[in-house]
Length: 333
Ligand SMILES: Nc1ncnc2c1ncn2[C@@H]1O[C@H](COP(=O)(O)OP(=O)(O)OP(=O)(O)O)[C@@H](O)[C@H]1O
Ligand SMILES: [Mg+2]
Image (cartoon, rainbow, N blue to C red; front, side, top):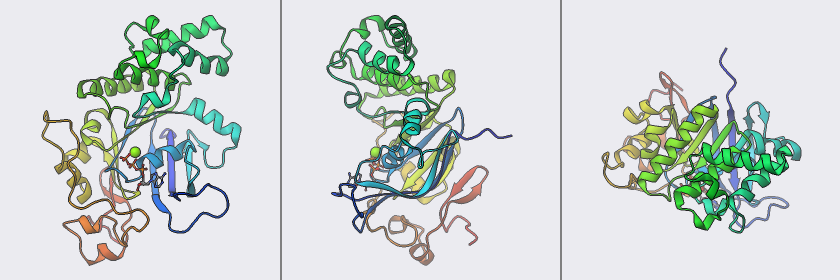
C-alpha cells in the first residue's frame, strides 16, 4: 500500500484582490496567483517548488496553512495535510494543523524572531503553552532544539537576542522554532536566499539532515534551481500560477521536458560560478490579472504553435514519473 501523502493539493485556485479588505464581495479582475494546481508531497520527501519571481509560489505556500493575506481568497480546490482538510478546518483544527502538522521558515528570520526576547524565551514560550512543561524541562527542550539545528554554543545562544546572532545562526534559530511542534511538513520559502553561498549550503544540508532524522517532509520554495539540485527528491515547476512540469528532481534537471523548464535551466550559470541566481529568460512572467489564453508560456515559447495560443494544456504523464503541460509534448487531447 502506498503511504498517505503528507500533503495533497487538488485543483487549488487562490486569487488576490489588491486593496480589498476581505469584506463583502471581492472586486473583479483578481490576480490569479494560483490557478488550478494539483500536487502531492510524500512522507520523508523534499519537494521543491521552483519558478521565476511572481509565479505564485509563496501564495501557494501560505494557502497551505490558511495564512493568506486578507486581500486573498482560496476560490477553489482542496488542501489535505496529513489527511486533514485545511480548507474546512475550524479555528481549533487550524491551530492544531499550524502547531503540529505544518511549520514554516522564511527568507528573513528577523521577521519571524522577536527582537526583544532571548532565544530561550522564544523557544520555551511556545513549548510551555503547548505542552505545559515545567520551566526546567522547557529549558532542556529548548537546548535540545538548538542542538538539533547544530547551533554553535547553544547554552550561550539561549541567553542572546536575535540581533546578537549571525545570519546563519538566526536561520538555525528559526528552524529550531519550526521544529518545536515536530511538524510533518516544513514549508521553507526561500530559506537561504539572503545568506552567503557557503552558509546556504550548510542550512540546506541541515534541513536535509533533519528531514532524515526526524522523518518529516519539506516543501522547499525557491526561484533558484541551483539550490534545488542537490537537496530535493521531487520538483514542481510553476509558471503563472500553474504547474508546468513535475518529476524526480534529477530527471527534471538533466532532461527537462517543458520549454519553460528548459529555459530556466539554460539560464543557470555553469556549476561553481556566481551565486546561482537565474539570469532572466527573454520576456517576462505575464500579469496574473490577464494571463494570455492558451498556454500561459506561449508568448515566450520558441516552440509555440497555433494550438498553444488557443487551448490551455493540462499537466499529463509524459515519461516515467514525469508530468508536463505542453501541447508539443504528446498531449493526446
Ligand atoms: N499583496 C499583494 N497584492 C497584489 N498582488 C500581489 C500581492 N502579493 C503577491 N501579489 C502578486 O501575486 C503574484 C504571485 O506572487 P507570489 O509572491 O506568490 O509569487 P512568488 O512566486 O512567490 O514570487 P517570488 O519568487 O518573487 O517570491 C505576483 O504576480 C505578485 O505580483
Ligand atoms: Mg515568493
